[in-house]
Image 1 (cartoon, rainbow, N blue to C red):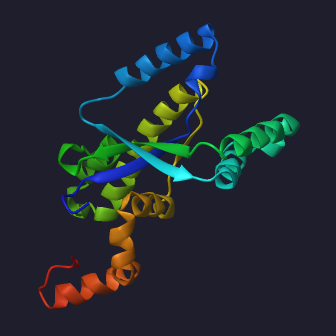
Image 2 (image 1 turned 180 degrees about the horizontal axis):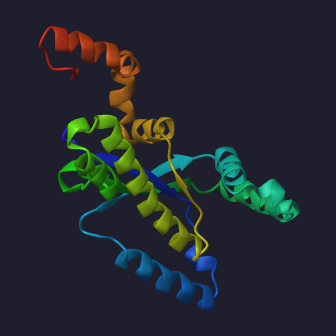
Image 3 (image 1 turned 180 degrees about the vertical axis):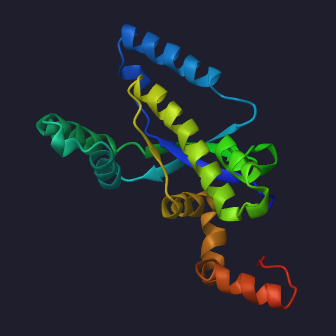
Length: 209
């Protein structure tokens, strides 16, 4: 980010709490409490929830892809569920929700690993400045470690998760944009880097209304 901080995003695939039995519900609540206790004030987490209307076919395809249903050995049961969803969709709108944990990692609060610091101090004659790439890789590995802990805890309460790559994050953010605003400025958003460079050369703000 421009302020020197970093972001990493963890997608959490939802589970239907209402379909759990009492014992499963207790485990889910207890496990989620443990997740919340792991949050360190130095690494604040933000929650992004995206709610969208969808049609039955798209919803079913998303379920099948996300949970690899064909490989579970219960596809016949899923087909019956799919037929039920298609029937229900005739009278009701289908709403999907996507959940994301966004980890913030500030360079101002970031301390370089002992390995890099000691390497610099041992040989003063060969001392060099630490590169931005080294700082980036250190921060990245630390963030992955933090999110991996959350992944393990969420997996313990049967919540599937995925650390998003850059292209996946871009798609999330594009979905987050107001659709009308995106359509009205489609050319700008699709060539945003070109507009930024041109604006910088002309010392103009890189945006359109």
